[in-house]
Length: 252
Image 1 (cartoon, one colour):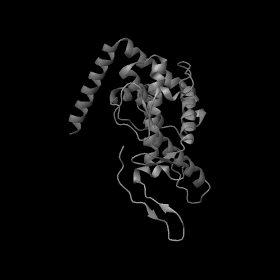
Image 2 (tube, one colour):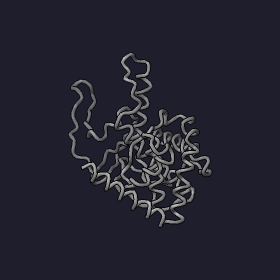
Image 3 (tube, one colour):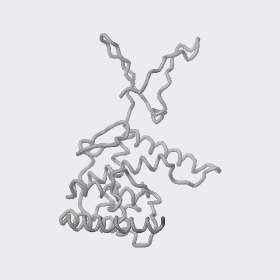
């Protein structure tokens, strides 16, 4: 991926060092240890390789939360990066293995660190998540739960919709997986008919995931039932969209 052209400049005549400005989309690397390598050849390359150990540890930690939350449905294997398509930036489109973005993980880690440091400040605003933090967490959760759905017997669009729905239940934000109907039905099964979305107060606390286990089981059972009899899902979706269209027309 070409990220533009930058000029190397001196950090100061007497400093003996040089610096280069990275594109804003790489701001997530701030504070990250990097290895610097030179590759010889007709066109020598200088390679900046970030240490992504913290992101990999975060993936392990979050996968454990998924194991806890879906524990009433079945046992999930240990986390394996081979189940995903690792990328640095989030992917908009993908096939087969769900993507896993290192940049998303680093954004979440930085936000967690900021919340910890600001919790002791008199100027802490009390908010749990920034918009960027929630978007990143929703994407990672959706990919994780799609993969968990594969392991638990869901396939294709049902696994995608299950991942979208669980991520929405945890963060309150939808993904771009196009599962509006399934997400709405999951909300009703999890919270009840007239309840507003109530994202997890502490998405990294095992207690929230343990308390959600019965609700996640109800949601999964519905998706599995739809997979076994797809026509019932098609009929229910058509009815849902007709009702939504009528409601929108009535409002207009």
